[in-house]
Length: 447
Image (cartoon, rainbow, N blue to C red; front, side, top):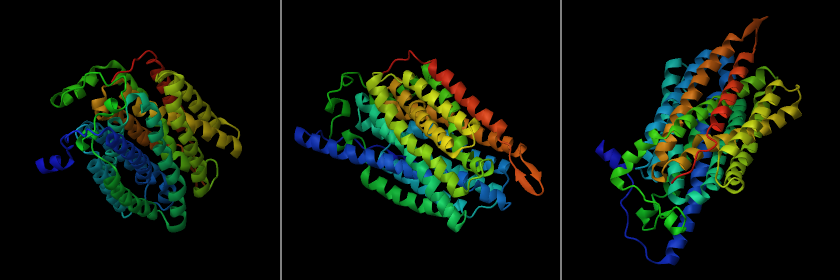
């Protein structure tokens, strides 16, 4: 265990570089490649997390699993992801991001290979649960790496860019993975993403760096002469105490519940949206994937737009943007589920939902927490928010699976689905999230 912890631990500070020109060159080089790696890498890692939602209908039609069983299997990932995001969030504040990211994603890929051979509930639940644990390395490590290399005055924009990873990953899953499943069968929906994620793990190892100070560089706030640079920073031995101190911030608990509610809706659409579009709206698997991809493309705009709007229009205040994006998300859900049965209006609903949802995930799922907690413990802040978020997603998976199965009727040997109860559950969660997030209107930033 000591050897394992030493392997993942952040390195010691190197002798400071005194050449200003060299410092500037190294900072610009490393910042660019780290941002590209954690954004594109995290996006691609989603393909090893979302495949189950794409293979649900083939598995149901083949009689391998029922909707309720798929709800149990799917919830296993969210429960382990929630626990992992908490513990790994605390560990990430002490870790070398290069190793943390690479190893986590590599083992996640191996779990996906195992899923391709799992046709029993027990084995699928074990592999999918393990996958959730190792997937949970990604987000805390990405955010910690970002806060180490980008200062608070630019964090909203950078976090928005990084948050496009959600949409990149979801879009690739909805289109690329559904095409693989249609062409080769459900097992290849696991095999190919696993192979891609092994390559991404190698890229993490090559491109991501440890903290700037381990390379002899000054802290990023000092390098940028940021107004936050003069703030007192916790000593190394007090990091854990600082991590625990965030639990005393009331806004963190409200934010955690708001995030949990929005993650109910987020993963409801990711996990059951393809099945809904196939069974209720009559689209093929590929068509359903393409329609959901529209929301992910819009999500790229939502993530970047949220970061820039909250930084520039609202002076880094997140609550006004939260309200705006929540309204867009709810309008989008209304069009998707209650609008006329018209593909054009469905696409418009997906656009509004994608912009609003991804903006909210950017804020409630991490950015807002890193704003109101000390920067040195960004991983712990992400962990606290993450455990609530993914418990919400896990509960959603089981509840949605049961509600959807209860809505099935057999007519002349054909399944007919009634998603009404599940839809009201999903929309209700978004409304509760809006109310909770709006209650944090006067919350102040800190670093």
